[in-house]
Amino acid sequence: MNQRTQILLGIAWLLFWLLLTVTAIQDFQRNGNDGPLWQPVLWEGSSALASTTLLFLQRHFTRRHDHLLVTPWRWFARQAIWLPVTWPSLCRWLSASAMPSMRWPDGPTRMRHGHRPSCTRT
Image (spheres, rainbow, N blue to C red):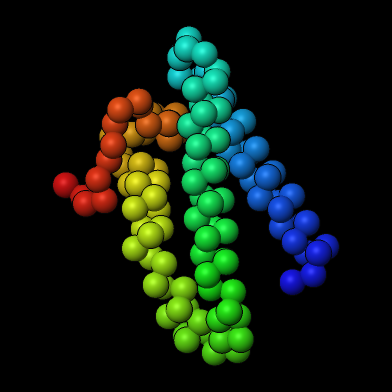
């Protein structure tokens, strides 16, 4: 991957997390929270840091398998080794966005502090 592509991907990743942070702040204020705005920034910032760290670790350790991209099934099998590392964070995100108890009549809302949904449906 050339340097220009890496820079564009980095800018897109930063803009993605900026959008998520701004949305979290808006949800925080819209839901009547009078707390300090650093809370949603901390929530999204820690998620961004963890996701970026996992992404860089996976990319570092699987870069040698790039030649398998011509055979997608073999490449995916090598990437799937990382699922036990990334699954807990993905599972938490999916369950939080899909749980009906986390929704208000006007749309989805941020999880309340201290509520940790499981990956199993009840």
